[in-house]
Image 1 (cartoon, one colour):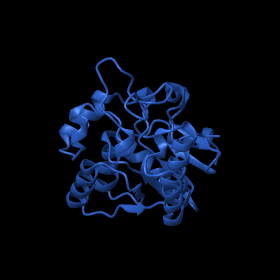
Image 2 (cartoon, helix red, strand yellow; image 1 turned 45 degrees about the horizontal axis):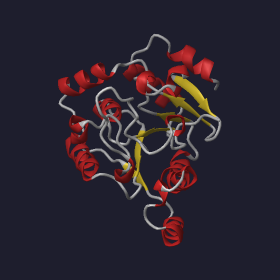
Image 3 (spheres, helix red, strand yellow; image 1 turned 180 degrees about the vertical axis):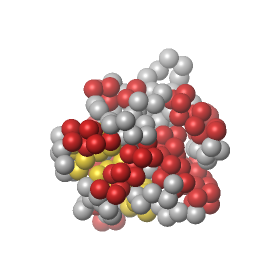
Image 4 (cartoon, helix red, strand yellow; image 1 turned 90 degrees about the vertical axis):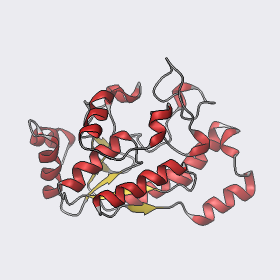
Length: 232
């Protein structure tokens, strides 16, 4: 199915109805990736509370914040649903660290992309393999690149349709939904972390800084993507 066909078929449907429609159209082939941030917790809540047949998974990079493990565990406790964990290839991690040390990602963009490739991109490809639709928590105002996307798109690199259910939501709407539904969220959000990834590569943002300024802050702004959400 093309992106335009799917866009047309879910046009006018609410989020729950859209997700249910997609899950029914592609039984057993719809997955949602969570990193336990605000947006992802909203979508996990919607999937779990409505018993939607969508597999929820996360990428366990081995470098996550303790607070991320906390909200992961709280989510399991609250909903009683399974969250599948995908880990990086052990030999690839061992080789990278043995050759370049544990913090090579600070030394160059190439090294950082290598680390992201091993810890995130390759496990993601395994998680997406054999599926037809990838659900994400992307919102349009999260970065400059994402303002030119649509809520349904084709990911050429992973050969999969992507659907972003809360693409048009503002951050205030996300926070309000979390409050109203008593959804567990990462406490780092209250400490100036709007975007939370691996611990060595994420810091709090200062007033007036870009949403993603805290990710790979030592790099040029235009290079701040890890490769998970490129569509070519």
